[in-house]
Length: 381
Image (cartoon, rainbow, N blue to C red; front, side, top):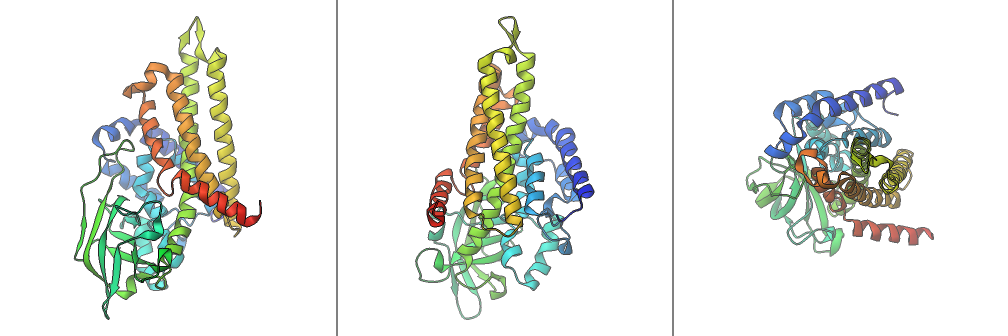
């Protein structure tokens, strides 16, 4: 483990109390204002949450994958937008740099990413490119002195406040992912512009927007790895991100189960608490069982990743199962709450909307199924 047991337990306890005492009371405010309060962001920076996955030498906490998912589970017990505010710094926005950056690139950016001074975004999706991520149309053309980057990226998380984008762009004529390269593109470069944040079904407070690159001059020093390695970098980044998102799904599910149990014990129908009715108990039992199964899968896969094992299949399975699981748990929670579950004041309908996105981003459930099947066939069972 990156941290000794006592230090890590203290971190978990701090995060748990921060979620319960500081973040949960603000959920309705974040939903109404579609924004995370600035003082909360400042507190998250001071806690080191922006640098969970970045090495200590660069100012981060340097957590292992197993430690990171345990923290992510705790963070899942509140509105997902809170975690999303620093999630790109921890995951997809920084990990390409962590995995493929050279010493100069890491020294320039990682300390500021870990502190939260620099906010990062991962720019892969395009208007015509989603699940087929090897088909990116954004181009980076070498002009003899630098790359000239042009194209539009869509639904980019934290684009509205990002200082640095990891951009996937086509640099060669080879079809598919083999012609894709990765670049570090600061927001300050001429020709970079950000669209208006999209209006979304849920996760208010977490913004996504288009990022437009209009003949942006990108120095060769900003390329991550060699030409043509961008797609491989992106896939490695997503493998880690899928485990993190899976853990957040578990945290949300456990929150929903706890809330459902509390409500079922308090709400009375036919002369007794609805928790005493067997059909309510059946929904609670199904939710608890699925959440426990997801937790076991994610923790086991995270430990295997830390041990250096190939977890492409297991990461996809974890993301597929956990994201589908939390959707079912949220649906049952609405049912247990009955009419109250449909009313905004109770917060259940908000989480019901929030969790729907987990089955889409960082690889849809259908893409996870394809990966699971491909890897299972490759392994022979």
